[in-house]
Image (cartoon, rainbow, N blue to C red; front, side, top):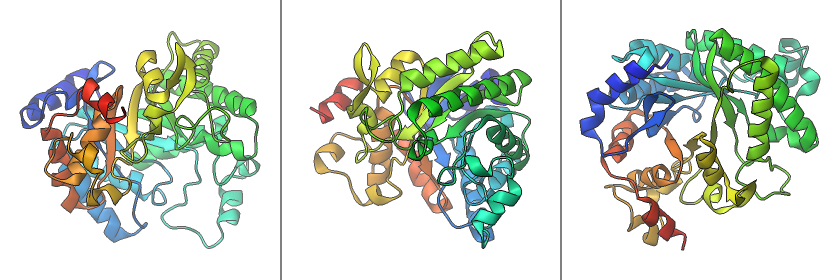
Length: 356
């Protein structure tokens, strides 16, 4: 697992390449504020090879955060992350590996009959799925074991419950909170056993929509449930550490929508910052859309040679953000994206001014 000494050594190896604040605190270690994501792409051998080259190149050029999920590309993304981690000239303990469980993970390719696959592969949980998503404790436990095997790891550094708001399509909010608490209690046990270092929630809409929206979940309530889970598991402190959510120039709701009770209504980013949670942001390039250009008034305030670099630096500038995750399924994109870290992100006042 990622350790203090190894991540600091990694920082010392690369820090002169990057601008100040490129490496940021995560627990007692340091991580790059740019991470590599593995979501996009077809589940093919050719795409596996591209991801392998991209991950190795990123790890060997100053990126020590790799994000994946068991369902990404039918489990292929996790498996290629494990192979790339072995191949890269980087100490495993210098890298933060994050993955997720919650959605159905087909095995290698999408089956002709997904419903039959689910009933045969997960007979104990088949009735618990909502739109292909299940967050029941036993199911997440099973998925965690499969992820450990796919990645070839003894410990996953950060494990997310994946898009629990999907459950709200068929279940009431209190029921979803109750199931999250039960699953957090199970994850507290896996933390104590050494299978997971930290856990959290990866979301798409839950934390960036207004209270009352069908997909809304209260981040303060999720944190409260994690603390209750720690108490139930008998652990001295909760392993709940982080949230993942979308954030970009075109999707800034996590900063602008004040829907979480705290010291008055707060945005997800501000609440997470004040609660001491790490935030990992996704889709800073809007799956490539922002590489064609940013709004002129925003681009003028950001450093970077390309639109992609400026968009990445916008996401890295948001308050409380530990790391911005960028899909890099092609080796051609790695050098350009990693070079974004050579430029200083916006300071707090300059960032706030964009929204005034």
